[in-house]
Amino acid sequence: PRMPPRIRILLPCLLLASPATAFFPPMPVLRGSSPLRTAAPPSPHTPRMCLTSEPLSAADKSTSTKTTPTTVLVVRHGETEWNTQGRWQGQQDSPLTDEGIQQALALGERLKRSGVTVDAVYSSDLLRAKRSAEMLCHSLDMDPSLIRENLDMRERGFGIFEGRTRAEVSEEYPVELNKYYSSNDGEFKVEGGESRRELINRSLKWLEEVGEEHDGGTVLVMTHGAVVSALFREILSIPYDPKPAADLRIRNTCICELRRDPGSTRWTVLSLGDVAHTEAKGLHGELTAPVEQEVPATETVQRITHTSRPSLPLRLFRRLKRSERAKNIGGWAAAGVLGFLAGRGPMGLLGL
Image 1 (cartoon, rainbow, N blue to C red):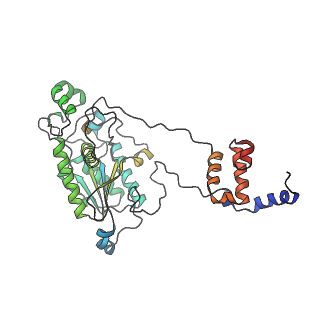
Image 2 (cartoon, rainbow, N blue to C red):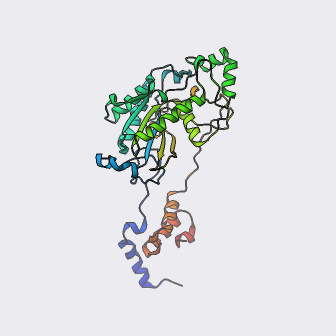
């Protein structure tokens, strides 16, 4: 049946009179890797990086132990000279590269823009971690002299491996290197070094002490790759596999966030290996696995592939069909136009 003449006359008028929101619902915030995205106020049940919109006042902090989760941001130091050379660092030291300094500054800028309130900054006593923490404090307009050094969060001791490249260790200590990679009981020690179990015990000790001292606050610690890997494996009960199909990738200045709800003794992992701040600036840093992360040379690196997205008209058509606005005549007409543009033919033109 033909559309009545009055309707044919009124339809264009209705289309012109309809507000833009009848045709296109508000676009949601796109969730990308950029740290600059707008976010809703944090909820205690939302698994995301703790970005507090308002700093805690003294009065707030007096009662925060009962209402506010405790947050610990565990961060690996910036890239060092020995990182780029593939040397085992352990408890020896190497200066930050220019890129390592920029990575730490970028992390501080990200936290500052996000509005996160850091109540205390801790650091391993090793120079590469302290220097990274200082750069971060400069970006946050914090006094670097307030950084609290802690021996429990220093890198694992790798004894006779330290200062040598992968090739040198493989040539000079083949038996010890094979034992290091094949042992999964956590008790093996390289000569002059320490075991994985010793590393886990001291890092867990630090975490519990900080959780009690800063109950309801937010703390950041600058530490090392093997510490982060071992600590998070222990918290998540991930066994160490000498020949994994895939492994944790702890890149320079990555953020790993832990949270403990009020009254709980259980830590929750909210993020692991977040490097959005360095990727946004093109600071990729160390792309190969650092030697101190207990990753065998046969590690399989899994890459994320991106699938193609539907066309813009089709995405808008689907969004409009799901909205309440599709129920009025303006929204129905808009859905029809978008459906036709999306290639759905006559059925799309009818908004179906």
